[in-house]
Image 1: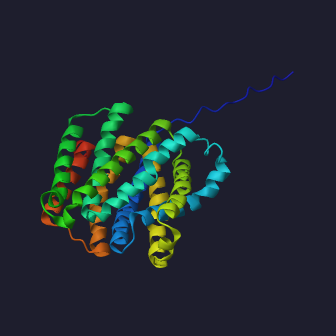
Image 2: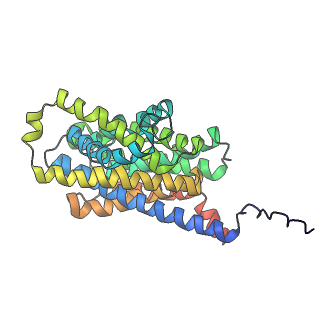
Image 3: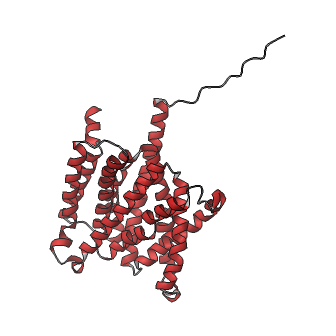
Length: 319
């Protein structure tokens, strides 16, 4: 009697250097998409404010459009459980990356020029994320992180100097700078939660967008009124719907989540380091704001600090 052949169970797939490199390339691609998308979103927000829109309209367009785009996905994955993420974690994510974050980030442009938000927000996100990764995720912080933080702080002060030391922008640039910094603190919380909970980027984005939609639409109608919305230019609102809703609210947020998942926090924060340069370059033709010499010096210092903090120069030496 022939004995049955033993079942063959293939070994579980193992990671290989080639697979790791492929994941890294995907992470870098998503990170670049996040950086370029953020730059255009920052420039569009500043242009919208200069064009007569209020921060409330920008937030409404961001989450109104993003929430409607992602609502069918969330229903498919399970609305009662928020796609398996759960209400506690979903509400925490929405607190960090939802309406409060958006109103601080975009509202800052009512007080400060594009160069301030383009440098202060990404710079503080990168440095604070690196520090938080060491404190909460066990990632080691070395001298490069500390040196980079010092350079970034110096660069941020240079960028904000005209608003702090003069009466530029009616003497209120510092208000916008504080709003940019506060939005960065919230974004760091979102970054750490994504990594700590190992959440799927698209599901997390859908949860944040839909929960924010449920808050921003009735909130806007109660506080601002439908008459205000009807009096605004349809083309201006549509443009912000594309830039703030589809680009910033969906594509950029999704790309950032994938970058964190593929590269980890300490490498993913490389890409906010590139946002200031992209934003200022985009902002020159979009809003006509050319940075002065002090702001350019601050931009260079911030970029050097960010690259130092993430170990870019050490990597170059090793190469």
